[in-house]
Amino acid sequence: MNVAKELLGLGLVAGSAFFYLQSVRFFGEGDHVAGILQIFVGLATTRAGLELVKLGLISESGVKRSEPRRPDGETTP
Image (cartoon, rainbow, N blue to C red; front, side):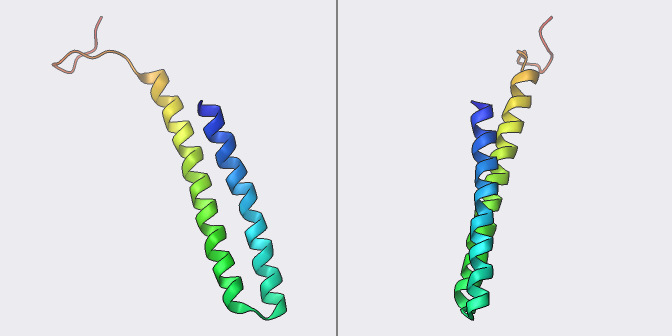
């Protein structure tokens, strides 16, 4: 499950390159508003991908560290 989150996140980060390339094309055509909007979409996609990768890594490390605890906070022997 964690590998799927990491792969999907990396796919989103890689896919955001499309939006950045589109923004360059729009700027080249002189359509600055569309270029700026594409940059915002690219930034949002990149951020979502990075957060998904971090979520996969954090949940993976949480599985390894989880151990039962007693109500007083001490670990069980």
